[in-house]
Image 1 (spheres, rainbow, N blue to C red):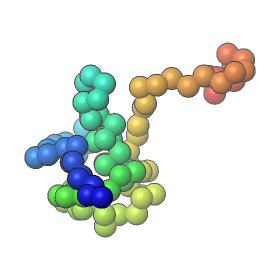
Image 2: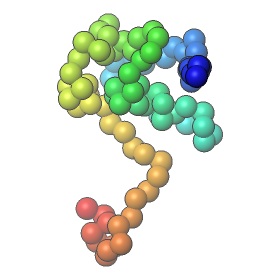
Image 3: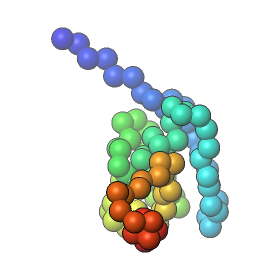
Length: 88
């Protein structure tokens, strides 16, 4: 059996200036979550690299990298409890 791998991002480049906040917006399936997962190393890059402040993120620990980023998911999660317990 031959398994063919398709890259989900090809020739993608993004430059964000130091201290800036970025929001990724787009339709479902437009690879927003993929980009966020690559930046935070939930996924590893198969080809190419992710560079932050002139450093390849593979040279950083996952904990230190993730302490520098914030992620707000588009899905809301509600627990089957009180309104108060869902706001904490």
